Each structure stands twice: as C-alpha cells, then as structure tokens.
Amino acid sequence: MGSLDALLVSLEQDAQGEAARLIAAAEQRARTIQAGALAERDRRRAEVLARVEAEGHRAVACATAAAARRFRDMRLRERAAVLERIFAEAAQELRIALLERYRQLLPRLLRDTTRYLEGTPAVLICRPEIGPLIEAGLPAELALTVEPSTEAAAGLLGRSADGLVVVDNTLPALLRRRQAELTIALVARLEAG
Image 1: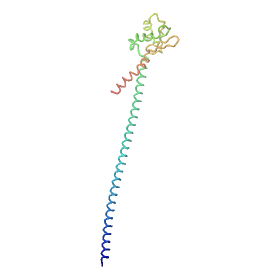
Image 2 (image 1 turned 90 degrees about the horizontal axis):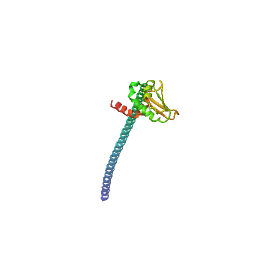
Image 3 (image 1 turned 90 degrees about the vertical axis):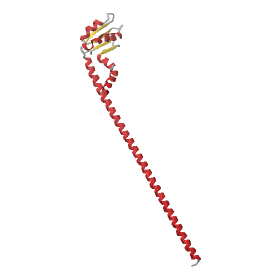
Image 4 (image 1 turned 135 degrees about the vertical axis):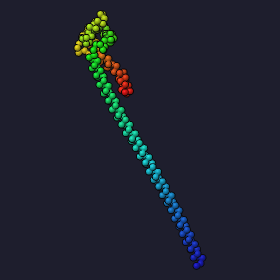
C-alpha cells in the first residue's frame, strides 16, 4: 500500500467527512425550514383564528344592534299605539264634556272664535246647554247667530255663512292642536314611570 492507497483512503475519508458534514448541514437546514414552516403555520392559524374571532364579534355586535333596533321600533310602535288610544279616549270624553268642566273657557273660546268671523255673517254652533251663555256673551254689533245642536262637540264651532271660514274651537279640536306638546309631556311621564 503505497502512498496511492493512503491517498485514496484519505480522499475517501475526506469525502465521507464532507458527505457527513453536508448531510448534517442539510439536516440542519431541513430542521430550520421545518421549524420555519411550523412557525408560519402557527402564525397563519393564529391569524385565521383572530380573523374568525373578530368576524364573530362583528356578527354578534350586528345581531345585537339589529335586536336593539327591533326592540326600539317595537317599543316606539307600542308607545304610539298607547298615545293614540289616550288621545282618542280624551277626544271622545271632551266631545261630550259637561259644561261645568269648561265653563271658565267659554269667554276665551267666544272671543277667539268671533275674532276670525268679524264683519261677515256667521253661525256659532254649540251644544244646547251653552247656547244661552254664548248668546249673552255676543257683542250686538256682530252678525252672528247661535245654532245649538245636540250633535255638536263641547266647545264652539264658528262657520261663515259662505262656508269659507271655519273656526273650530271645540274641545276635541283644541286637544288636536295641543297634541304635540301633550305627547311630549305624556312620553316623559311614561318614560319616568
């Protein structure tokens, strides 16, 4: 065995050492790549889970907001129905209110009604029990006649002879004109109670 054999053995040993080193380096690179891939997989999984969680939170928030909106709408409709019933009942009661309940309003109702009918022939329509009180309060210079009617609402309704001017100062009409401000007061009371 000469130096050639020793050289071959040395080259073979060097080749085996180089192969072992390359294999170790490749294995190390494979482990690094595998670790990177696992880390990337975990990062992407966490990202997807975070996105799914965020979408879930958004879906819950949207569903909650929609439910709150439906509840608020339902509550508003119910409140409107209650207010409508209250005003309908009040208008019905006011339509047939006894004179004692609104006697103190008569001078103002007469003044407010005749103010729009001055200088023109007109009729004042009222319930029979207030006809004499209205006639007694009419200024003589006005061309107004009083027409009692059992069908009339409580209060006073003035109508020009030609029908072009109508002054509705009946109690139900007064209620309708004040309905917005009364609604605000009623809602405040309903909300407080």
